[in-house]
Structure formats: structure tokens, C-alpha cells
Image 1 (cartoon, rainbow, N blue to C red):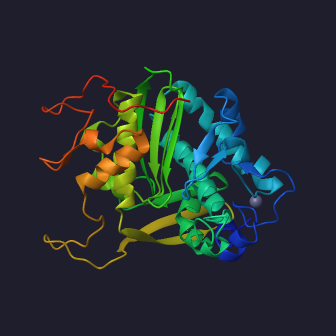
Image 2: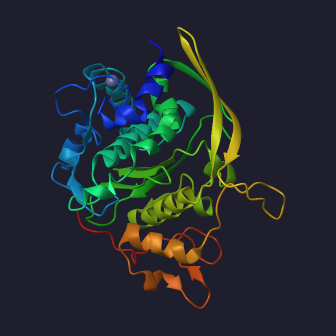
Length: 339
Ligand SMILES: [Zn+2]
């Protein structure tokens, strides 16, 4: 099996348009397809009838959140990815490099699934001329996500510029304090980031070739690995989603494949806009704006922006650290939606 060929086929605009298997571009099974949020998770957290918001503002129940998938991928390597990740959530932490990769594959699957799903939905059903929520051509950029996902099919060696793997990943331990439940999911499909909390383990993954983690190795306020409240995790997720959306560069890769091994070499950072910063570096992230950050936190945490943005100082308030940079005990001014 040539995995890189399957990847190229799966991400082609034609495959996406024709609703082929999202993982290999082959003929999808006649069944429901692949559940983007897996059934084991829907079962354990009673998510079937709960809904997720899409870019066009509509909400869809998790039970209908599926993408076309063939039987071989569904029961083969995708099932392996599901099996491999569950002990991580039971353990409640990610410690080894291998666990990082296992989690990265699983979250790549979710992110890729969501993006493919968005392409199949019209932006506004009343105005079909507006086209799908995410245009199919966008999926062609998702080859990088496939590199991570498909490392589950065949032994893969990564040579990356910023770290061990071509993604950024931050994890936290969350102590549950409100009846909001033990499950939380948020995504920013344009920034290619996804944040998920299952029980006490909370993880934020960004398909950015490792750029964010290169610049901010320990995440917002260097809290990587800290024990936080679910409100504080929402703020961490919002900050990381926002940073992800500011990314203004991608990577070039050199790939090769043999019978037994795939080699993924990250060759260079390729800025989208050739803007030179004052220090002479190429711009990789657009400028951070505290007001926009406040809007993002408002969106992810359902708080009123006027409560968190300080017009006088131009700063967004935080519930993560105090003025000395010390982790705060959970504050609850960010209210979570129930359920
Ligand atoms: Zn397939």
C-alpha cells in the first residue's frame, strides 16, 4: 500500500466533492461513515443528542456528525487510533513522546473529520449559491494533517524543524468544579486547532507544523501541564485557538515512502505573506490584539466581552495568573454553558 498516494487522493478536491472516503479517497461504505466524535466517547459522556456549533452558526447533534469513510479505513487503522488513545484518557495525562503522537493522530482525525464535514454543508441552506462552509479546495492544504494521521498506517519517521512532530500540543489536568460535565470540545478550523477535555485530561492540538510550540513552548503563561479549573481551561483554549488563527506561514515537506517506512521531512517555514519584521525575521504570526482576544474568549466562554476587556489599559483580563505571574485558584467569572 502506498500511503502517500492515498493521502494525495483523499485530499484532492475531486475526492472531497464526490464524498469519497475522507481517509483514503476510496469508495465509502454504504453505512453511516466515520463518527467524527467516536461512539465510545458519545456513549461514555451521553453526547448523542448534544450539539456542536459549525462555522455558519448552525448546530448539529454529535450522532449526525459523520464523514464518508470506507470499511477498510473504518475498521482498520482508524479503529487502531481509537483503541490506542483511550488508555491516555483513563490515565489522565500525557507523559511520553509516543503518547503525544497517539494523541496527535487522534486529534488529527477529529480535526480532519470536522473540516471535511464543513465542506459538505452549505453555508446557508436558503442561499445555496454561497457554497459550502469550507470550500473543498481548502482541504488540499490538509495534506499536513494526513501526515500525522497516516503515521498510524505505516512506520513513519519525522524530521521536524521545531520539535519531534509536525504539530503543537499542550495538555493540562482539569479538576471538575461545576456541573458543566466532564466533556468539552472547541475548535478553530481556520487556525486548525482543536481543544478537548475528557474527564481530567484536557488537550489542545494545533496542526501548524509545530510553530506555536516553537515560539511558546509551555503555552499561555507557561502553564503547560498545570492543574486548572474547567473555566481556566476554556481561557487557555481560547488563547491558543486565537494564536493558531494568527499563523501566517506553512511548511514545505519532503516525503518518501518504501514498503515498510514513510519519511516526512520538514524542509522550511514558508510565510504566506512576505513581510519582514523589525528584527529582520520573516513574519510567521500576525500581530496579537488583546481586544480581539477578548472577543475570542467571549465566544468560547460565553462571557460578556465588556467584563473581560479593560478599555483603560487595552488589556484582556485573565483568570489564569495573578499580577505576580502565579497560577490563580479557579475563579468563576467565566461561566460555562450547561450541558
Ligand atoms: Zn478509506
